[in-house]
Length: 473
Image (cartoon, rainbow, N blue to C red; front, side, top):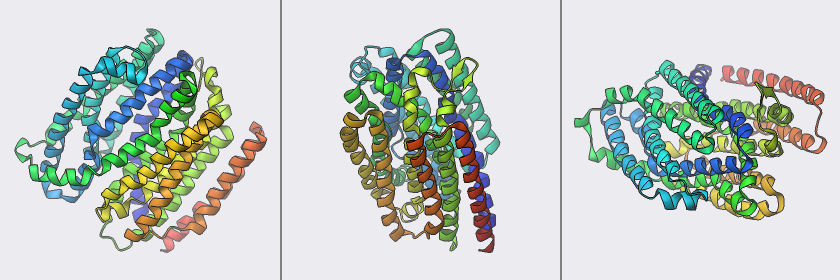
């Protein structure tokens, strides 16, 4: 088992780090945006990226999950899988972007409250390019092209940062500059991955029968993905409706830092999905997956505790004249640990995917995503008028917890993973206790350092116990 664990973490670290590099740029942009934009402008930009997140569901329509499953499962027909996937994506993405382009004027007014058609012209291009390039990056992961994956990630970060610094900071183009910078990065990413994609295409291999099978597997992910995005992003529009655009800006600044946990979870999942798919026939897979879950629980809880104790000091750090979050947005720090806790529950949800994939039960996912989405909307409507952005954050957190717990009971009947709850729950409970104490007493920096040092001793001891248990098994 220990060798399998080493394989999993080696692959996960490489691809997770590449993904984190790409997504971490959004955190690197927070100082630029929150020190340059008003609360209202940052709120508007957040709504624009919220719309992009919603639209990406329909541009993808489950093809990423289908590509991973069929590319891994039909090793003799890889050219057929790649050709069928990307020709279909190219056609559908072009049609979707054409529709966005045609209806730019009414859409900008309805979605963003401003008449600026150029924004949606740029967004149509971003959505088209990302639909192809993001899916094509999957090929690098499955072909173990780690160095190229990392290189592309690094280039994306450099281009995105450079374009934003030039257009937002130096040219002062505001929201428009931020969108233009995103489009430039999308163009560069597309051009980088294009040779890899063309090398794998065989136009004569396009298969309507394979497309039918891929759509049959992938389409059930659409409502699941839709409900997921509702959970992740709908609160921006609800905060806008119930509290105003300025409050959206404050909430989005805190949410952006809180979603660092989402990047970690998604990065883990990029290594997790190919790994567990490769272990479908392994009789020791349940115990191996449970052991991995224990490691992941420790890692995510450790990150969470660090931010609980130090987030207020971190956001006030001054680097090259910029604080991590602009002073106008410092009220957002209280929601960061709550958002992170919600994404820990999402990580638990992802750990339950082997049963869904092994038993081809993707059609059941929408009901659990729906539980999260419906509860999130309902709780937001209830909590925001009473507790503002803190209410919105807790609505999201509780909804992720409900989604993970309900899926757990379903998937354990499909493919039982013997989670070591006696190990995980006390350590997670310790993190919850630290959050509660910090919330009540607001520790000084010195106290936080001492407390975190004690916590690290406990975690290091726990890791030694885990390693010994894995070696013994």
